Length: 120
Length: 111
Image 1 (cartoon, each protein chain N blue to C red):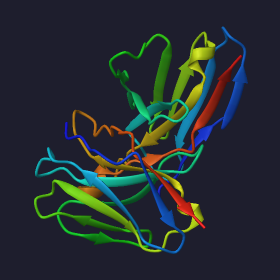
Image 2 (cartoon, rainbow over the protein chains, first blue to last red; image 1 turned 30 degrees about the vertical axis):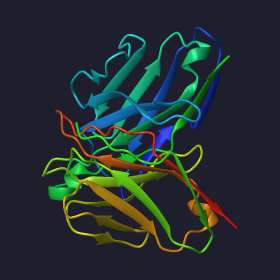
Image 3 (cartoon, each protein chain N blue to C red; image 1 turned 180 degrees about the vertical axis):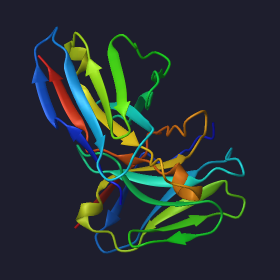
Image 4 (tube, chains in turn brown, red; image 1 turned 120 degrees about the vertical axis):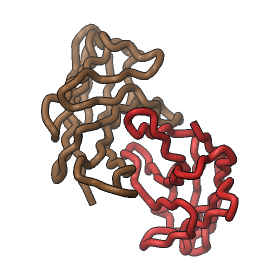
């Protein structure tokens, strides 16, 4: 199946710094990627939809200036947590849709392994 | 958006079948039912999906009722490694095939 990677897998940073998380589709191209965050013992919460070559679409309540998304190529989307604070500590997960998928497979999403962010 | 309802947790004995129910009474005719699972501290893993007919793959079987208002994921011989949170999702299309996760069912497989 299609593989999505994330880098880094874990990051610890000081409060006030910015952290960039990469999401890559390794063996397929993705015009659309999604970013989720997950707090302990909770479900995944969709943050934004990342579209290659255009601005991301953010879910209600998600600050676009806080969580900067760049989808500059068909295989890479980045999420930058700006001026991170301890409350931003979470598990961040991306997913991607295969550009070439058709029919039922057009609905499939492939998830990355997640990035655990800890802000001190 | 079609929403799903799942029990918060279930137990299953190792080697026995695990049957995980899901209600999706507001599902529309062209929406698929997807199942994912998430093992602790990992990204979600695709299990199976279906529209109307029952489906089976190497991981599981999916039974969808005739009225499509509910479905059951069956793990035929559960192992300890199947302990995870299982999410039943109805795929919505609102300008980008967003996947909205509910609370899921936490399955504990016990020896």
